[in-house]
Image (tube, rainbow, N blue to C red):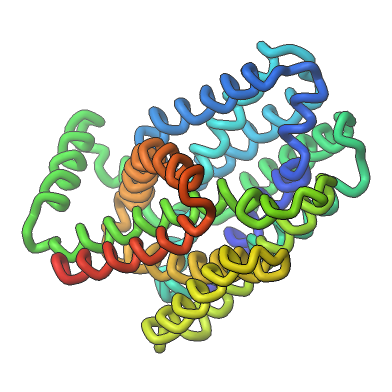
Length: 388
């Protein structure tokens, strides 16, 4: 029997955070923060996530994933309420600390908690179901949050903070216990002994030649995460760079919500087409690349919109597939830790890839994007040939 409580909690967490997502950067700037200071704030967040992601995820694996996501709601509430009163660089920096920690606590534990508390369900079905409804709620609540308040208003931040506090109390009261309580089961051992055992297991698992296929799956997972993050970073200039008449932020907000719905549709489409995912993925790729080249050739607004829509749809379809394969391969006891290791590796690669892509785009234009997708398919082919 699928546990809807965990699913609803995850959707609620994302929905409340989405109430301010559409205008968060503009809100900070409206309080007198400069672009340089904003850059420092976001860099501070990225550094926190990079350094604490793996240790916190390991903590959630060993102690309690439920505790981690409930604590994430508390930290998120503090972030939102601090943002509502922040009026200086130092206060925004403090708020970003709580934001980063809430993301670390939630992202590191939630997927593992959702999967392992539904052991009778197929992992791909669990992930596609959550992804489908998560993108819908994000789209709806991001629009709601931006419709009823001005950018400068702190009202939505206060409302969101209180709602997140309610999520925390409801989660603590109604969420089920973890499917495993490893520290209790190993109470005869010290924490150091447990850590040494787990570290040895991780090292042996990655190094062992019998787990050759895992390495291939991990590489594929990192590649598709990179691809998704690249189009998230570049969708605005890719779609609208040739159409300077589009200036109003509301257009970007509406199109952002539309792309979230596209990813929701892709998630549902993946769930319904798992049995023929290879042929579906191939057809999607051919259509996406064809339209993307046409968008760069004809420079028509509607073709650019169709192109970025297809790019998100194709990438989300394959991201769900690679994520499912990855979680089917790894140990449930260290699921969050494995996931965080992959996240850290892909973030390191992103630091290298994004500047290179920016340079190539400045020289060759946005035709770089479909070429990048062709390169992804080529690399993926050789990974399969080497590890599968």
